[in-house]
Length: 267
Length: 313
Image (tube, rainbow over all chains, first blue to last red; front, top):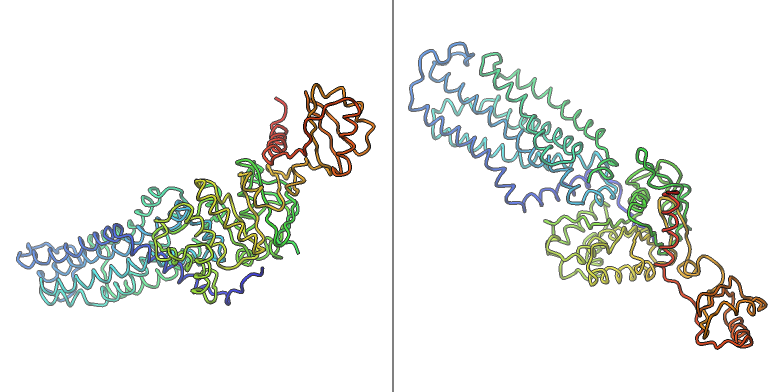
């Protein structure tokens, strides 16, 4: 009996195979999909609702005092844009929070389902496994984030002044949602995959993954307190920081993955 | 060529020695039983043999690949059936196989899947979710998954544990079928009937290798002869002196009306034994070759090793 000859080693094919499996499982887990849709729905509804409310409410004088409004705007429009910017910050939490739901389960779930050992007994390499797991957590989160952004734009354009929609389409948010959201999502997912591969309890992984949102909250607060103004240089700086951070974290995840310990010490 | 060869293979977890100096060879096409109590180190050994965990010491070659040199090549050459099937319940039977075929980068995957679904009687379940299968069917799917890349070596870790008798029978028949195809199978089990039915050679193992031999040799207690029991009317002990002079009889002992002797050639020696007994005035009621069960051998050998390991009280 001879071993069948596998085709030339292909990391891409193995990653795609595992990613396809993960997405199939997610598609068939309607409870999880529904739960994942709740957060974007709330954020979108909140943003459209606030715009509807603000449109019919006079901005109190002096409300924008001490903040850093976009230059050359009247106080009413400046305030509304600042409010929308804050709400958009909440939308940026979608690609940060949603991947943790899937990624927390990534390694522990395989271990608890007793599928990790057969999986690791294939020629799949650790980094391939982790990339597939990370992408499986990132892709639905990013799709939902983009969908939420699209629905928000449509909703705000109906509910608010056209100038606000234009501001939501400025590069800070359009490029931000297209480029920063996936990068943030990758960071969050990879961090949670690391947690999932290092703790042996799903609840612990979920609790620890929640901490990943803190830096974004701090940034949001600093904007609200006028310590930081969101502009294009900040966006470029964010992208340039996130790319090496994402790659570095993935490298770290591979280094921290203790194949033997997971197989032999976890019950 | 040896399908598996280990030399003083050892694995230690902190201060616990799980496998110590294991030296075995498994020939191509052989079904090799690996028997031992719970916690003996069987699963650890199998995990080392498919490069899932590294040994602390010793060397091994699996399908010609040295352990530690190229883990991916070993994993491509080995099919493993873990103690629990470990299937993706939300995926269908076909999708489960498809995933593993893609991870092994197999050609003509759809045809292979159909072949193994047919071989294991799963063809009418191909679009059924794995989570909806019975335990026996799940185990068969796990076997199909282990076979899909046609590995030269199959490692089966307690394939029928936790199965009801009917499901266990299905899985055992499946393994017998694979044996018929000439596959090399390393079968870890503590189901002795299963080992008796399927294995060409059996290793008795409890952290260390205690004994390795064919089933018939193990039943003979590892000796070269066969044990014959004679039942006589009345006490057998007084007859021992009369038998001492008969050539070819060894290890004579008596217990009540029973006499046991070890002989090399029963065809030649048994008539002499009966003549000697009759000559000594005994009424021979029965004469039969003693067949110890594997369970008796196992309890004797592994039990003794456990006692030895515990040391004096």
